[in-house]
Length: 407
Picture 1: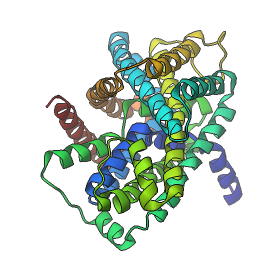
Picture 2 (picture 1 turned 90 degrees about the vertical axis):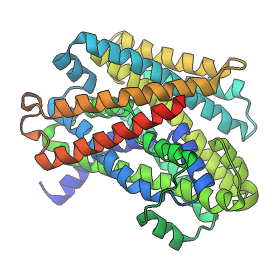
Picture 3 (picture 1 turned 45 degrees about the vertical axis):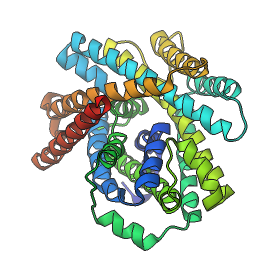
């Protein structure tokens, strides 16, 4: 294959890896990075290096399983470990993603309020937009729009530059691990790590690889897509932390959410930095509100053996389309309900998310080492050591995160 043909093939395959990784920077993720920067300056930047490695390892395995097996993760779990285990796994993940979807619409509402739009207008409009996108669109169109959403994340780069950080200090903190032995720092660090890898991501990425028709002979291009996506999402995380560290931390301003960060940036870094931060939050919230219900519909239908896919119609895949519709409708209604307990909803969803992640990661490692599924594409010994170490660290961090939730 010539160099130009390889480039064209790469461009045709790019999508699933970049999209999945960037959804990681949702409303909750942006809030976590903003709080880390505002409360602790640049001292957590070093964690982004091991976080990026962990993300690449797990996402690469998901994409590889999709390309080689031609099946989604939920379908592989059902075929290898039975319907009962798959059913309960789907139930818990459904509850988690319902809470997460509501959180994304809450982020969308909050970001629009910064521009003077009431949530009773912005949330229904946003819900209808994301519903029409998937229900009426094709996979090719939907993927292109999702990639456009990914580009909007770049607004955080000029927002950080406007904050005028000390770039030499940023570089030093990136390679010089530091640690503070206090509860708030530890919980925030766990939050930064925990927001990186979520159970739904692995299901969505593998399903997207399958629906796009990526085969094992073209897997090299999918791997580049995954690695680039992981670097991009954590680069954006870096700029969010830098923007808040260079301004809010130095001014001693404490925040509790991403919208607090956007408001607080205006008098310090300027109106335009604040606006860019708010645009990024709005984009991330609506983007994630599209992907999370889609990922949930994918893995539940695969787990139950039902038809699934963006290219399908209501007649072809009624369960898939209705699940997507119901998740968006309920998620939006929760935010619109007066005095809705959004914080407890987000809290419970994160606890369940943390509890489910170890199970999903272990299933992935067991499946990817089955030769009858992966043929010669199983993990090498070296990669297994890296992968299991990553899983072990993620399980330990997630377990600690869940414990701190109850303390």
